[in-house]
Image (cartoon, rainbow, N blue to C red; front, side, top):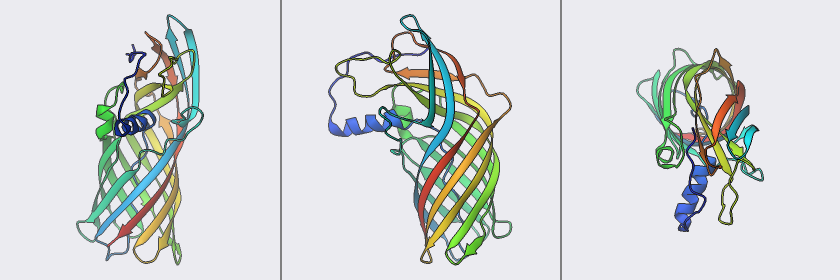
Length: 273
């Protein structure tokens, strides 16, 4: 059963309000930042990545006041009237441990992760990594469970032009992923102090097949801009979803949830030294 916040809101200072906005639009599970390994002289890399998921989903919820209501959503998360969720940029870094082994990590408001990147032969990169909730995911209200995942990927990144690298890859991942759906009226509470639309928040264990296609554009010798699309497909039967609801009508229950595929669109800037 979903727990609910009270209908009223206290006034909050601007900084706290900004944090609440990030909390309201940031609960989705994006893949980790891409490991584009530079030429052998690169030792330390840093960068920033933003992204957004498109993953068609359907949920049926029920409450004593509304009966059963079906919610549908594609982009995650879409705030009314359609503001995209780009408010969770991920900072990431990579350190060369040897000529063929690199340690990477990333951190944002809602995700934190670590990975090992092995280069058996250039331009192939084998990645083993894990990620989980970031600091705000633990502090935000009405978040079900703990998100986490592990993944293994193989990335092929040949240089196809003087300043262009092609990115092609795939792999497997498993873990508990977050998803949220905007819960419009009559499921969402409506009041004079209402600031954010209601959200039905989902956490579900999934085994996925992950694909990757994209480009890395070199800016000089040490900087790159990455543009990528990462389709993913559900394998097998997922786990039972956990749920919670932010600012929904009382006693709202998740009856069913369905989502079997999607794709992540990401853009990154990184530099090496």
